[in-house]
Image 1 (tube, rainbow, N blue to C red):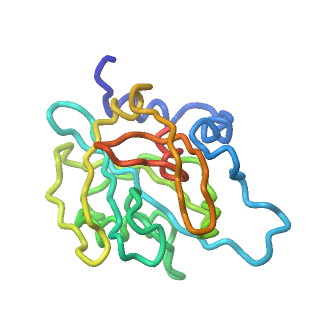
Image 2: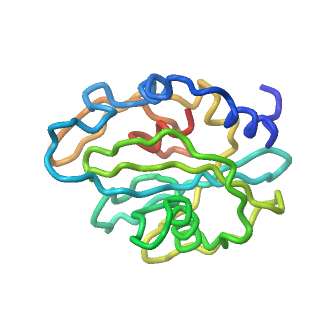
Amino acid sequence: MPPITLSHIQEALALAPFDSRAAHGLMAPLTRPTNRPADLPGMARIGSVLLLLYCHCEELHLVLTRRRDDMNSHAGQVSFPGGRAEAAETLAEAALRETEEEVGVRPSTITLLGELATIWIPPSDFQVHPFVGWVQSGERPSFQLAANEVAELLEVPLRHLLSTASRREGTIERQEYRMTVPYFDVDGHMVWGGYGRDPQ
């Protein structure tokens, strides 16, 4: 696979609209809806995440974090930096703020390149807005992890996620369910669900 450059990312984000739900469906659990049902009571929580890109060892990387095992929600799971938007901020501002809080990269050093299709996360009833950002220096930033939330930082070459060799299928077990899911294998970690769909 030839090297992926920032220009490739910018060109992809500028493409005419396509059926992103179909693309998401390639990595979505078969037994789980990809859209929030219209008859579901209440309102979904709104949040955003950041797919943070930078150049390291002459190729594009993005950042994932593994949440601590004692977290109240999504414990131990791998995700992009992000979280719930506060009342006085935009979704883009929320993604940048959460990125600074979780991995220590300042918003002033990041250029937002675009936004991807919204994803619904059923267990937490979150409508997640994914943004793509670029570290302005182009180089690997100095990360400082939030010890109360982040257990591990994963720096992933983008080409790894685009390779079919990284795509697997496995079983997820929780108290309330057991399901077979498609996932990305990232250094032995399962990246699945909403966060497994974003790299599409």
